[in-house]
Picture 1: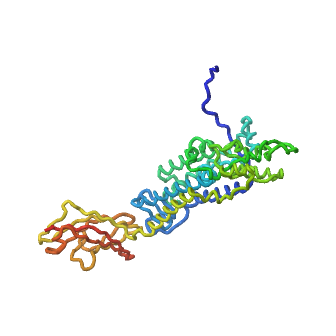
Picture 2: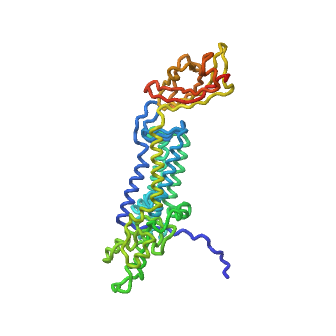
Picture 3: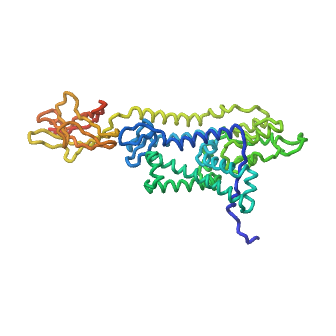
Length: 470
C-alpha cells in the first residue's frame, strides 16, 4: 500500500481552444457583439428627464431609490416590477434549458461572453492553439515576456472598461467619467471599478472554464429542467465508431479520430465520451466536426444537437425527428405560458398605474375630535409622490355636493407644492358640520380627490370618516 496521499483535486490543465469557423461560431460572435455593445454603450444613451435629473435613458438612482428605463420610472414601492422581471428571467432560463440544454451558458452567459473576448485577444497576440501551447511550454524569454505583457495589458483595459461601464449605470455617465479621470469621483466608484476590474481579469483570463465547472451551480441543477426530449449536443457513436484513420474505411466509422472537436472545445472535454457536466453546448465542436466531414466526403451531423429520445430511433435507421417536435411539448409550453403571463401582467400593471400616486393613512388617536361649534373633525396623513424633476402643485378636493369640508394643515389653500422627485407629506383635516349625517353616523365612506395642478390628472383615495355614532 502506497504512503502517498490520494489526490482529491486534479491540478488545472490550461485549455487553449483552436480557432474554428462555422454557423455556431458566427452565432456566438454576433451574440457577443450585441451583448457587449448593449453593456458598454447603454449608459451613454441620452433621454430628456427635465431639470434636476441626468439626461440618461437607463439609470439606477440609488440616492433616491429609483430606477429609470427610458420612459419608465420605478419607485421603491413598485419593487414588484423588479421582482416580476426576475421571475421572468428565471422562467426564461428554465424554458431555454428544458428546450435546448445549456444554451444560456454556451452563448449569452457573461462568463462565456467575456471569456470569448479574452481568448480572442489571446489568439490575436500569441497565435492559434499550437502557437499558444508552444509558448506556454517554453521557458521564460524575451518573446514570452513580451507577448504575455501585451496580452495582460489588453486584458486589463477590457477589465477596466467592464468595471467602468458598470458604475456608469448609477450616475450621469459623462459627468462620472470626467470625475473619474480628474480624481474627483466618490471613493465607492473607484472601489467598484477596481473590484470589477480584478474579477473580470481573473474570471475571463485566468479561471475561465473553472468558473463554469466549480463556481457555477447551474450545471448541477440543470438536470431538473431537462428530459428525454431536451435537445443537447451529442456524438452519434453508432455512425462514428469504430473510429480510425486510413484510406480503407470499410470496417471503420465516420469518425477519423482527428480530435478537432476536442481542440476547439473551450471546456477542454471530448464530447465523444458522452454527456458531461462541463459541456456548455456552445456548438463549436459541431462546426469543427462538420468541417472535417466536408473534407473527407462524409455527411455532416456526426456531432449535432440531438434529443436522447431520438437515439434509439436513429440507431434503428429511422430518419431524424424534426426539431420543432421536441421544442413544442407540454413542459416548454407550460414555461412559455407562465413567462408570457408574468410579462402581460407586468405590462398591464405598468400602463394602469395611476398618473398621480398618493397614499392615505387615517390618524386614529383620537378617532375624531369635537370642535367648539359641535363639528366633528377627522385627521388623515396623505402622501403625494412628485415624479417630476421640478416643484409640482397638487390640489385636494372632496366630491361635489358633499356636506363635508376639507382643510390642510399649514396652508390656507387646498394645494400642496411637492419638491422635485420626492413624496410630499401633508396632514389633512375633514370636518363634518354639526348635525350633519356624517357627524351623527358611526362610519361614513368618503372619497378624497387629488388633482395634478399642471396636467389635470386625477387620483382618488377611499377612506372612512368616523362620527359620534349617536
